[in-house]
Image 1 (cartoon, rainbow, N blue to C red):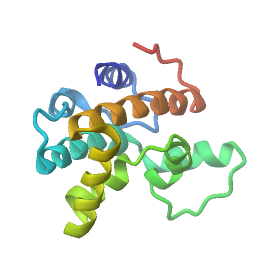
Image 2 (cartoon, rainbow, N blue to C red; image 1 turned 90 degrees about the vertical axis):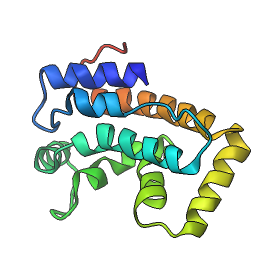
Image 3 (cartoon, rainbow, N blue to C red; image 1 turned 60 degrees about the vertical axis):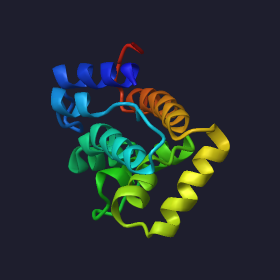
Image 4 (cartoon, helix red, strand yellow; image 1 turned 180 degrees about the vertical axis):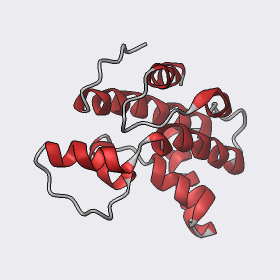
Length: 152
């Protein structure tokens, strides 16, 4: 988590056109869950998603994609434009956010929490693994977008 926050603070210091400044408030709000509560786990996934995903800006990402020779749908939002990067890393952060804090029915929340506990033992351990996946994916995304970000 500290490594991700460091990278985002570097971007905030000199934001490229495709990245919105996230600021200290969002960075402070993103933290590891302290308990094994599904509600807290969902809150922390939401905060991490807001810190990472919501910082990307759609129109400049469209230009990056078209300049790279990709044919895109003009209606794609920033997340759709980056989706291939995120999915390639096996990260489910944004989908989990939707299931846990957005549009998911209670049955999907129960399945997600059961799966996280089965694979990782606790929701905190799952969150820690997820943050690590995102840190690695974020480095690859930044490199693909031509950024020279120091790992930490």
